[in-house]
Length: 394
Image (cartoon, rainbow, N blue to C red; front, side, top):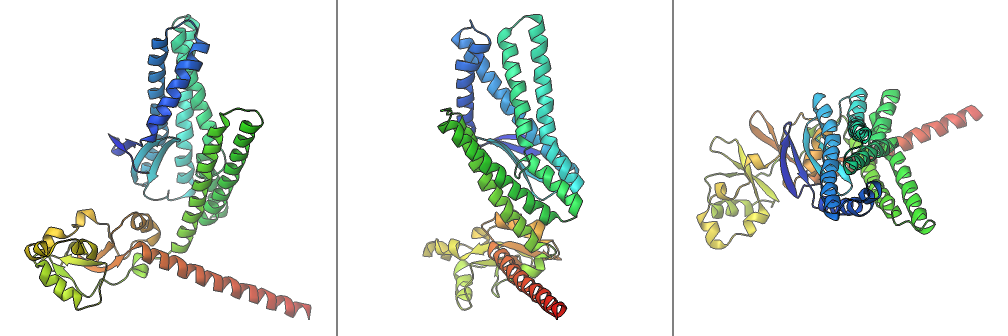
């Protein structure tokens, strides 16, 4: 999920918020100011309730950020890069570039978030208890007690045993350690997550219809989100299983036979390219023959005849710093996420020379071939088993 507003970086990790955070702030603020705070500390002014509600909402978002930062910091400790952290309507999301290297790391990354939430609950609870014992600032201790309760609930909820919840990651790590098969562990955790999501949808629906409690809609919303996320987890597990042990060189396609140079006029390049089989993108080289970027057929077609006559490939190329660059010996499983999120072909470079291109279509082809070969292998194993059974029966 891409952030709508970037807040900066914390410990070198980009942090942002999605526009939907505004909605949750309004809903939380309204509920606190009109119901929770007046019930816990009656007699206050409306303005005081709203000011404290706003402060509590900001502190709650800060605790969500601490939850995700804990995941990110532990992941970086194990060599996993973190793309960004985004806060949104249903919580937060720390986007990791790859998966933890072993089951122990997977477990500790998963537990870091709930432990941070439990720590926040203990901190807010201690502060609330201290103020309560003094008999001062009832509005403040009620607000802090609410924060303690919500963070404790957040920690417990996240430990439900189904991906993509933290509890699902814990289950995955445990199964990975037990079976030594990460793909099996990921598939099982994803299926458990879908079961949990269906139970949440059913429970929320009953809460609305049987108890006439509209709060069940939140449970239904969370359940649907987890259901779709669980399906995405299953697809990701299938992807990783198909690409395990495959290198970038095994999936890449050769670069087009036509390449341009940064100093080449567009009209001259188009004339040369038109004489060969067309391609969606063409490599652009520097005078020494080293990659300097890409130019796409789409971008060339959008230029006017006058622009094509005046410009060179240097003017219209996508430079290297805007492209994904891979090595032919990179594991395709690790490169897949970078490939899938880019709209331009990835450059495969070896010893400074362009040796191939890699696109999402190349990934799809590799996965389809894996599915076909796995299907044939399964059929062959089934035939062997059947033949063995027939032989024993005679």
